[in-house]
Amino acid sequence: MKQDFVPLLITAVFLTLTFNAACRQSTTSTAPATAFDAAAHKQEIEKWQSSRLASLTKEDGWLTLVGLFWLKEGENKFGSDQTSAVALPKDKAPPLAGSLWLEKGSVRLVARPGVEITSDGKAVTELELKDDTDDAGPTILKLGSLLINIVKRGDRTGVRVKDTESRTSREFKGLEYYPIDPKWRIEARFEPYQPSKAIPITNVLAMTENESSPGAIAFTVDSKTYRIDPILEKGETDLFVMIADGTTGSETYGAGRYIYVSPPDASGKLVIDFNKAYSPPCAFTNYATCPLPPQQNRLPFRIEAGEKKYAGAGH
Image 1 (cartoon, one colour):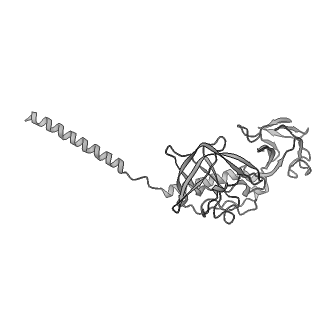
Image 2 (tube, rainbow, N blue to C red; image 1 turned 180 degrees about the vertical axis):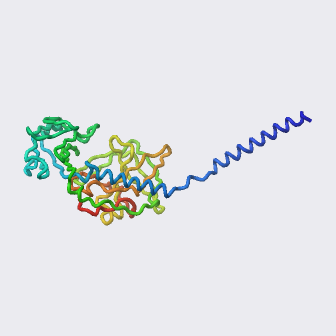
Image 3 (spheres, rainbow, N blue to C red; image 1 turned 90 degrees about the horizontal axis):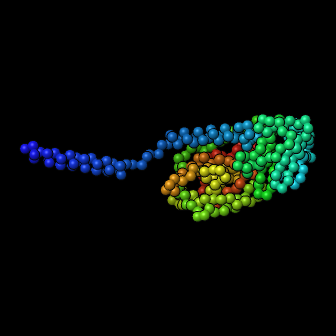
């Protein structure tokens, strides 16, 4: 009897384990996809909106930009004297604060004796200045409430001036958004270019430069597929997208809006969330050099999501 029972027991255990394993496999293969969490998405967008506001209104944010000047080869005087090559805001600097020497693409500061200019908290009288294409970022000069740095745009070298006490900052009217809508959080597909494609991008000053696009973002709206080209900025991993749509110029900023998109996963999937579309710096100041959406990124439908046109005075 015991001899007969042993093989029966082994058989029963084997069948039980096989059945349980089959059940587990069946459960795994038929498990539904994770349901979309609308509340979590709303919280994510609200957090992004708060970060956006903090970035815009910080001490050296875009609201503080008060000047942009292009340098000529040789000496460029700067100060509050409005005939200066770099004319600083009145009552914010001495009539002549010093000179910026442009020599074969490099810029050298020579401060006038007695004028207090600092960089990284240290007083400077003469200094070679890094521009905004440098891996470490530009040299920031501080003169009273003014922040001054060098920018490169194509073959031109300029001076960007910010004022931490700017009128635009003081009179800022806040940001307005469309209601958060999960409809505009779209699962998309990344279609890589091999190799990366050079895309001509024109800015608001009509200056055109080639930017590198690693691939197209393909997505569907109302059963139709669209493709837009992002660019990959130096030192960034997120994709930078410039768009225009049916709301551009009427309800949203006339030169388009920007979005950053996280890189695709291993299967090429990514999410473009138009609830995070925002106005470029040019919406708030006349002195930014904002790039404009290329033709392929000008969408023929309305995107009622993201940031609306700024209500205050702007560009």
